[in-house]
Amino acid sequence: MPTESVQYRLQGRVATLRIDDGKRNALTPQILREIYRALDQAESDRAIVIISGRESVFSAGFDLNVMKRGGIDALRMLRAGYALPARVLAYPYPVIAACNGHALAMGVFLMLSADYVIGSRGDFKIAANEVAIGLTMPRVAAAMLRHRLNPAAFQRAVTLSEYFDVEAARTAGFFDEVVDPGELIPRAEAHAESLQALDPRAHTTSKRRIRAALIRRIRYSIPLDLLDAAITGLRGRRSR
Image 1 (tube, helix red, strand yellow):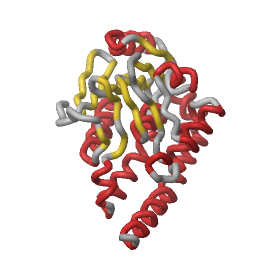
Image 2 (cartoon, helix red, strand yellow; image 1 turned 120 degrees about the vertical axis):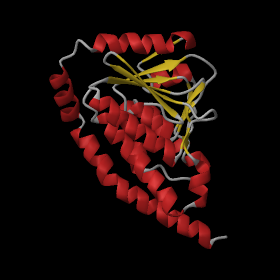
Image 3 (cartoon, helix red, strand yellow; image 1 turned 135 degrees about the vertical axis):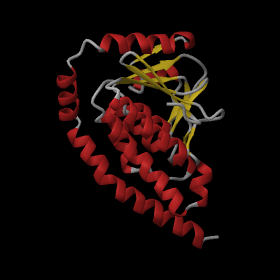
Image 4 (spheres, rainbow, N blue to C red; image 1 turned 45 degrees about the vertical axis):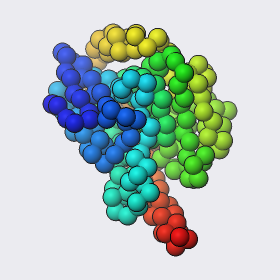
């Protein structure tokens, strides 16, 4: 199922979704649509999923050009992005995120929605940098950070926009393990292979049971976060 920026490759029971826009893997409206389509295809294929980025970058988050323009296109992009973690959290088969490098903002929240996260060693930064660029942390984003990070790291990530290097990110809870760059995809594929031994029904039921409250919180928060974004956009236009 070739797409412009999200490549889909199925090998046996493992589907790899590779995001590659040739730049920073900004989550544009088009790329978000492609990710949703790829997840739907993987579910139809009853596949374990590996989500990866391109060389040196997993994703830099939402497309800031769309954000700056505001309007309905920005709100639609935000809605699709905010809903994506819930889609991945409830995906009925295991999901592995293979983080190739930098991950920022919405790219982090997508990564943290996976069942298992593998990071690549290198001079990379992981950050939820909303506060640093003048945005109040969205409720959906805060819920995803709280889901994975230890309490002290969660506080620093949200309130101080701390940039974590790879080893600090592993300690904080962003990553389950860290490997050398050349080992990233082979390690993700090997782990996906081992996860095929899980009972699919038990896996799906268990993950949805323990994440039910989180998924409800995300879905409840989306309209509130969109309202915040709309109000902020209106205030910004009035001030110009």
